[in-house]
Length: 180
Image (tube, rainbow, N blue to C red; front, side, top):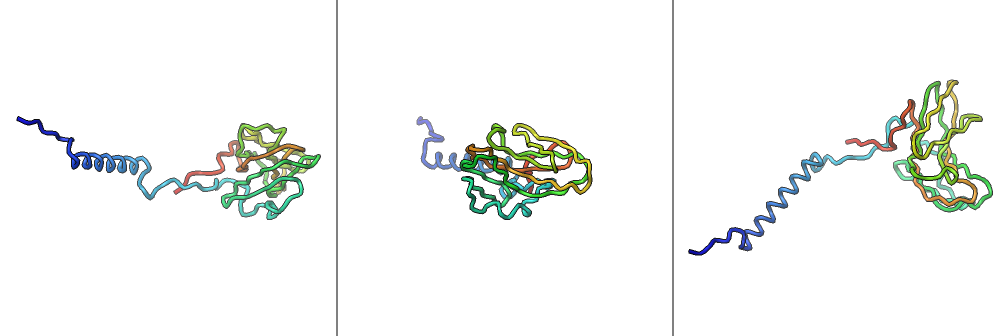
């Protein structure tokens, strides 16, 4: 009596491959909650820095050695070397804030503030967005106009993408939120 090979035939191997492919496809669909429901990144709706109101000269040709590009979503890529003897302040946007607590975040991690950073200037006060965590500050007068800057220190190299977030409260959150 001859032993039957169940999976030894070419047809059996093809059938197993198809079953595995269908099973993996179904598992992928389940994990991603369907094939058409992928996560879509949206800019944080609580962000007070309006991407559409960025300073319209951000991407202009510069004499300081820095190149700036702004993505459609509002990420600001800064690269090059500051060839000047002074810190370069790149104005992103003016924002008007009311009395309250605010938090700013650069979206850039693991860098040295002696090289480049994000800041917000409220008259004479400069608040630097800490590179490792959010920076919280308080506005004490209504209709206070503040300017958000990227600062590149004198003679320093930079190759960073800033994702600036300014929100009311004590936690800036992320530049992107996951939406559908």
